[in-house]
Amino acid sequence: MNYETACKFLINQTLLNEENPNALLIRLQQGQAPIPGQITSILLALKVVFEGLKDATVVDKNLAYALYQLSIKTQQLFAVGRKKGVQWPPLLLQDLLRIATATECIFSGEWQSLH
Image (tube, rainbow, N blue to C red; front, side, top):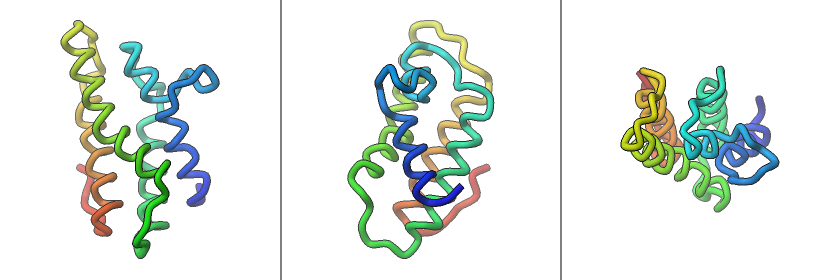
């Protein structure tokens, strides 16, 4: 996966439209777990974006907004779903925290362990 593909993929995971019904935000909003491999692909894309932006001083506004949504909005949707009684997969919260950590790494310029 190259930088441009990774950026596009991450942005697509946050778009709330009918063209991408399996976007992470849509699935969480509907009380559905991510599709198999989706979190792994998101984490891979975040690592690629980190490498691409390591020395950058500016981040594209659309990408920054997608990163925000992936790190904050996903956790909010998780909490709302839990309050509504959604039975999330056991490791989903930890996966969402890994996404948030990877996003933080992109903005800090230093990669941390995602464990």
